Image 1 (spheres, rainbow, N blue to C red):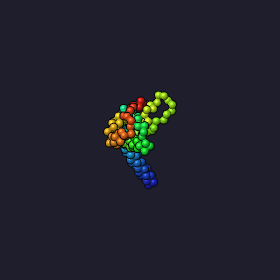
Image 2: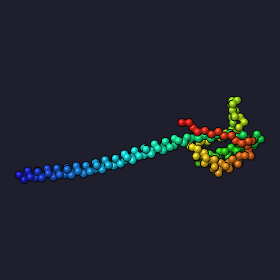
Image 3: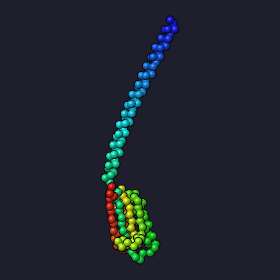
Image 4: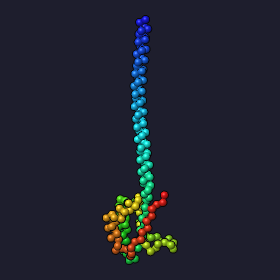
Length: 163
């Protein structure tokens, strides 16, 4: 009988212990489910924000700005170097992307704009960045610095990238 009571007492203790562990596990599970639900909601909100940002940025198409320069025919090599370095300096303006500059290369195409000796091309993320470039002190200074080397006003061609 002593053993039966002792056995019964052990079984009751084990059962109580299991129920307590089960209760603790249940509480932990409920806490994890709540945390998962919160993170799922945060993730969904972040996805919505990303979609909104992407749709806003898709309204801004990249803008390409091309400028053609007629250089005076009697310009020295030293002055040509100054002209080219002045143009290359425009690439340092923060809003300017993918800057390129070069001299005309005659490939025998009769349609070529051969009266322009130098061309410059740069991209901007949007029209607002182009406007910032137009009013940037370095751009305005470059325009003035180039005047003595030019045979006439530059020509430009701007376009928005088609998606």
